[in-house]
Image (cartoon, rainbow, N blue to C red; front, side):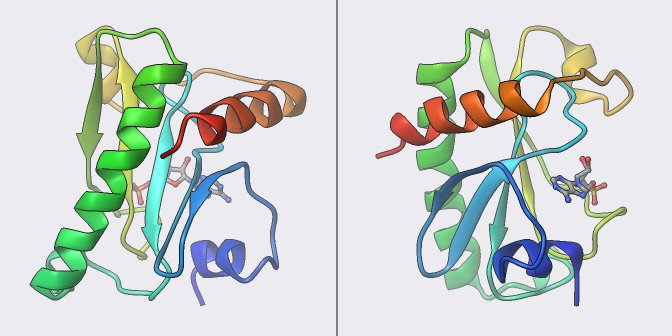
Length: 129
Ligand code: AMP
């Protein structure tokens, strides 16, 4: 069972920003930038292009809605999107509010307190439509 499935089942906590029957979005615990969010299908699949076309399209639709909420919440030049999955073998889309190329490079990391994560997740969630 992946660490993200454990988040989905509630076994471990997350800073959730959005959820429906098929997807969940929560803040990345080791973010590149403020608002770095992961969008995850509840069905545990390793690689994004092993999803069916329909599942892939639904994941992109849900990610679009999360990105819109991020744009409304976090001051940034744009929302960057990336799929890697080398660390956690459970499909996830990284949505990252970016101001510079370095924000997409997964080297620079920013720290937040628990209270800051909670407050940010609540604000993004409030802008999710
Ligand atoms: P990758 O699989 O290379 O796309 O990276 C996995 C991402 O998941 C990294 O950015 C981690 O910081 C993030 N991550 C790992 N565990 C957790 C967790 N428990 N909650 C939130 N994000 C996590």
